[in-house]
Structure formats: C-alpha cells, structure tokens
Length: 130
Image (tube, rainbow, N blue to C red; front, side):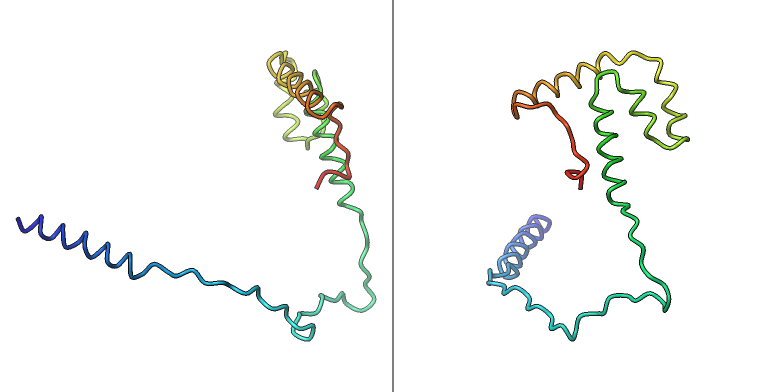
C-alpha cells in the first residue's frame, strides 16, 4: 500500500512540476548587429609579408569533380582509385582485378534515372562543387 501511495505521489509531483516548468512561448527579437567599432580587426601579417593567392579552392573543386566523374563512370574503378594518395591507392588496387557488375549496374541505373528526371547526362562541373 505504501509503495502504491509513494508511486502515486511521485506521478502527481512529476505532473505538477511538468506543468509549472513548461516555458511560455515568447517572441525573440533578432540580435542587433554589433557596431563596427566592436568588431575584431582582421588578423594582420607581419611587416614585409604579403598574402599569396594559391587558388587552392579551384584545385580542390576540380579534384572532387574528377573524382565524382570517375566514381560514376561504368568500368571507371581504376580511374577512381588513381585519384587517391599512394597508401589508399595501394590498398584499393587489390580490388582492381575484380569485375564490378553490381557497381556498374548501380551506376547505369543512376545515369538512367538522372537522364529521365533532368533530361541530360550527369556531368559535374568544378564550379558547382562547394
């Protein structure tokens, strides 16, 4: 009997606490923009040093675009593997002698679905890669 009474008290307390602690909905104003004087200054290079534009983003985007094209080409597993660094390439080369009928079938299904939906072949451009 005491266990049941204790259980009922616990359930009642939880229900009351839940009703009391439910936050009310309030409109929140967007935070005001910080004045220019409070914004931190851009980091500066030491005197005599200038920043160099390496165009790394373009190289990375081109690499991802080529990797994607290789991955979505039937029979393109070797080309896909060749785009990795040496340790990864060496690990994946042992699979290059296999026939990838299931993978080629999936690539073909993807290409057909893409063509049916967008009325053009799938081709990724480097500028479209993030």
